[in-house]
Image (cartoon, rainbow over all chains, first blue to last red; front, side, top):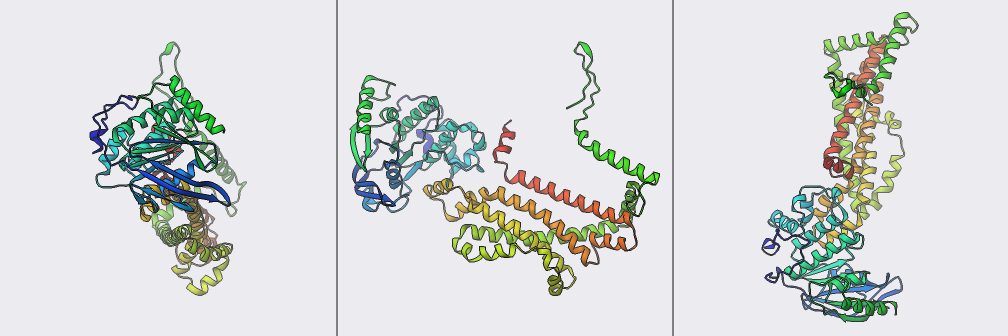
Amino acid sequence: MLATVMDPSVSFRDAAPADHAVPVSPAAELALRGIHKSFGGRTVLSGLDLDIARHSFVSIVGRSGEGKSTLLRMLAGLETPDAGGVNLNGKPVRGLSPDVTMMFQDARLLPWQTVLGNAGIARGQGWRREALAALAAVGLEDRANEWPAVLSGGQKQRVALARALVRHPGLLLLDEPFGALDALTRADMQRLVERLWRQTGFTAVLVTHDVAEAVALSDRVLVLRGGRIALDLPVDLPRPRPRASADAAALEATILNALLG
Amino acid sequence: MSLSLSAPHGVALRWRFNAAPLLPWLVPAALILAWQIGSDAGWITRRTLPSPLSIANAIAALAWSGELFHHAAISLQRAVLGFVIGGTLGLGFGVLNGISPLASRLLDTTLQMLRTIPHLAIIPMVILWFGIGEGAKIFLVAAGVFFPMYLNTYHGVRMADAGLLEMGRVYRLSGWAVFWRVILPGAMPSVLLGVRYGLGIMWLTLIVAETISASAGIGYMTMNAREFLQTDVVLAGVLLYALLGKLSDVAAKVLERRCIAWHPSFAAQREG
């Protein structure tokens, strides 16, 4: 199923639109109501309401310690709110959902499994074929039998992305997955994620501290400050987006102002 | 550092002598030669230290009569049995206490207390319990191997990467899958360290146990030879222990290479 939408002949650098693509799994929608969360008396999220539409790409930016990652982990079911509720596709989230997957800051590959074994970590029916197709989609099918130890940082994150794709996620959560990469690799990864998002049609939520990255990738940027959403800015720029356009720069300035308060 | 000869004008000689692999053996060879010369000249008395040649003769005679293999086989059997029993128990308790906080709270303090007792100190008790039969020696080896295996396994399992465990949760791996694919392989380098420590203790314990009471085995052979002042046979037994110790170390290294081929130090070699 993956193979039909992820044409291995398309290079990962090729960010050309693929309008013929059909979603592989129904994109998820999210509704958060009155979310409170505190750690040891320190309030991180207070009375947060948020709706995320199907097949949207939402970025969450904020300073360190403003609860971006906590919010994302809550969407993953790794954290539970002290008050309020998270609904995924109209149903309350309790624990981890098979429909949701997450990419972390570090790739978190199993060093003792090959690239293929990592991509197909969940070992479902026909996992080898699925994992190979996903590796092809991220341009790493020829590294399938190697150990993660010999890959570069960017390649490791691409394996992590392939691993996420094998699950046909309705919701892909990205916790600063490109933060540790060099600028060129980061730009490559951003284009790859954007292309796969357009082709496969999952809902994406990205946590980042890079305002330019948020504007380049998402339909909507949220600025988190003081446990609430300080700014909810739609990014209505055509895709594929040219780098460093004047429109993008204006949006980035607005976001930065909201961040700095 | 290789000594290679090549003719001028770029014409390589067909004969090349690479001395590098022989270099580490130069000093031992010189020492043995000096020892032999010292014995022949009468500077070293035969009762203090027999000459290398007479030791070689003793080994040849023991091998010819089959005695050598008989005793070595019995020692090896005790070593393997004791190691398997002690190692399996150590691995089992290490894993159990590593993954279960309840088991750890219940058992770890007790095991740490027992660990501080030198296992050779209980030889008199072991003889009372098991007599001087095979049971006593196997018990002592097992007791010696248990603790390094337990400690290293426990440590390896406890040190499981929290990030990988969380990844396992996000990917909804079952408890078994998390154990077999995340925790145990991650603990493997530590477990193998336990194996190598355990192998060292295994031979040490066996030497002591066989020297105290046995009717067969390398230790018995050397003690028996001492009674008759056959110092060459005593030293042949010592050499045999050294050889078996080296063999088990090589086996542990092979095991290490197979089990942690993914490790960056090995993986990079394969790539290069």
